[in-house]
Image 1: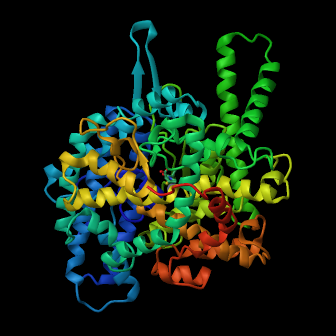
Image 2 (image 1 turned 180 degrees about the horizontal axis):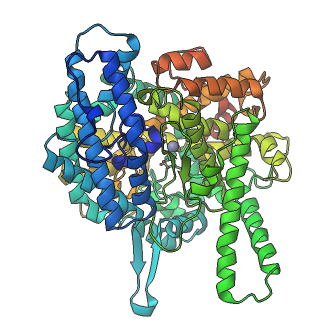
Image 3 (image 1 turned 90 degrees about the vertical axis):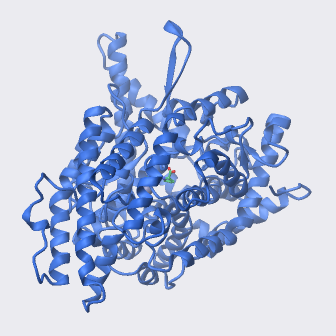
Length: 640
Ligand code: X8Z
Ligand code: ZN
């Protein structure tokens, strides 16, 4: 992850990105401290240096993720090392201001500087270099992850896209199991690297004055890190009863579909049957979890696939000589056309709120579809390439389905945050906290009601009935409620790994214990320590903190409710869309512009009237579904 300013999604750039790296050794004179430099002057110099160095370091990360090979890895590791060394130097220089009087703004900037990376690096140059090389290698290993079967001419290799597609579409028990297990082979070679990575970031965190890297991560929330942990427990307690109902319903349906094999020990959801490699989103099980088939057709994926098929057919119809090489070309062109149309649709939601159009360079420079000729990190991310945000991009491998469409809205949430806070000093160019950054696009996804989907031609009709309401609620719940315990368990695992309570010889056991405890999910065959299943989830090798997504899944309902109120919505919360509402857009934009310039509690209050994260808006939104689920689950032995 990047150093400070680079916001979160950047974060996604992961371990490599640290914000400002050096442009070339020796460090420019500006990075050296002059005697008697005031704290204000020091922070101004840090901001200036980071802004200057941002384009080169982000470009090196961009290349390493969009063109995976040893050369890009070498360059990216090198920039990451320079940047981390630079950060360590700035943090060291900042110590001289400890306890001195200074403006609130400068004190905040200095505090943020110390939290400027999720990959704190040892000061020792050899170990710092080792760390950045490991981080880059794990990131690229994940991106290049491939599962092959068969030999010679029979050899078939599949990457994350094809394997995910099996879980999304096939209902064959064994085909799903093979795809799931196949993907989990790609992380086996990461185990040693990860263990060393943990030692090195812990050393870096300790040198900065934290107990370990997890303690450092928990310190980034304008509150005591222990209180922060308690806060996540409290929020989880608020939503767990809703999750339990959804879990029980899904398990019953799985058992109806797969018999005894539909659950593990009659309690847990089988990891490979949830439509998603990590069981974090169950939307793909719509075919058999849909409460009322036919009541309100919400099959957006079908409609996007049809649009892509039409784009392809129109291209083929124009061909004079449709030989197979041309058909492949036209297929790729159609993939690109539909990906661009989906992105323009998402942009339209933001501009409809009164936000600016994306710069044209966004479309020229983004990676929207998977290139044919090389490995890339397909995991979606949003990039701010320079401090004035004149160059912003997304990197995705878009396919025409609902999941990907909502991910585009999510990524554009990051992009609009970058655009909104571009006039802040670099150290304040970040989300109010990282959960805010993750929540922007998702708040908009909540406003994609059936009425909105119809207005943009993604569904034909909106049905008004109790059945249709439950269907629409279930569609959201499979994405948002199913996610909640997953959002929490990843960092429960990493916090334990960083503080030493989870030992390397227990990495996998601890992982599955947490999956069982929080998500109620289990593998159908033993997953011993010969595997390293955490490494099969992007954010672990990518070193992106994950609690942000849990917080986002609470906050986005608070934001949504506030924006609905701003738009004058009357009636039940789940019926609101603020699409095209300029008042809601202005309120949202005002929040984004603040960036990280003030404590998040203040920012939250300005939008919602409260300083607390609170799941009551989640519960209000899903109240109809919760009632319905409780009725469905009557007589079942729920719980896990
Ligand atoms: O990683 C992401 C985004 C990029 S910040 C695509 N998300 C999490 C995930 O995929 O695991 C969004 C939801 C959760
Ligand atoms: Zn994100």
